[in-house]
Length: 321
Image 1 (cartoon, rainbow, N blue to C red):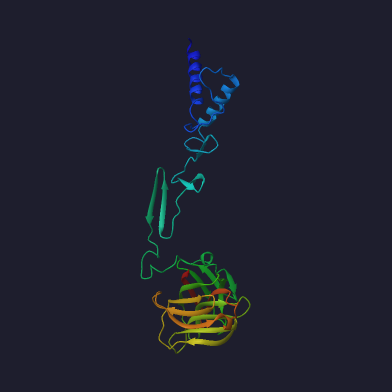
Image 2: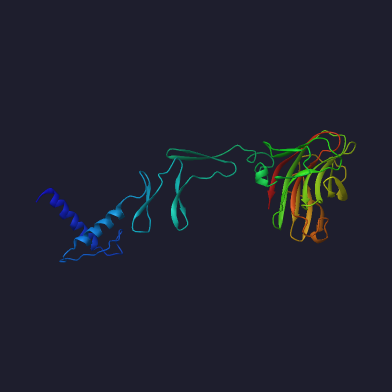
């Protein structure tokens, strides 16, 4: 018998044997099953051959990982690039993905390796490392819309969002705001002020009703009085209204932690110098609050430089819980 005839006979034998394997054992499903003594039809034999060839044909390109596609054939994921892994995707096919780096983590991908390391970021060390957010930006906080911008400017600086304002009318508020989340929520912010003023100067956070009125908490400096904390109303960005709380002149330093809460029924204002222990200084039912039941609709970070010197307000940390 010639070598070719021997090969054909062997292959036919393999097809016949493969055809007789119980379906529960088979890795490749064949359309026809043959038994001993049966006259084999060439069309059926070729159908089995084509099915077997299709099943055993590697899926994907060179160096792809093979998996059962569920359709009687193999499929491939990849080939994987440096650092990629085959990651499960529910009940679907595996996906080629790289690891994502969280806050304070750096990931380095190389041929055949993935290195995960902690970074020496500002949130990993220092006094407030347990409670500081990642460096706030306009994008991460959503504080992207100006209220009474005037000549003020904003930057995403190395330490957070900074609003810089020239001298202004004593009651002129300039700030950035974002829609408030659904209640209940708590906003905790670390706010600093860079200023050298002989008059009134404010920097803080609070609520804006989206039309005119504000209710805010801030650190304020005076010409002859130590800095104080205040909760105040503004009938519009350039008109100060009533004062809900004024602290004693206790030489409050900056930066200072401010906290505003909306539990769905009440809104409240608090401040802290350690970021954990807060003094609540004012609370009111939303329905009877200055901004009304639906007016506590926007969060604002603002600065009022006062009439004497340019000032900078910086948002160093911003968390929502």
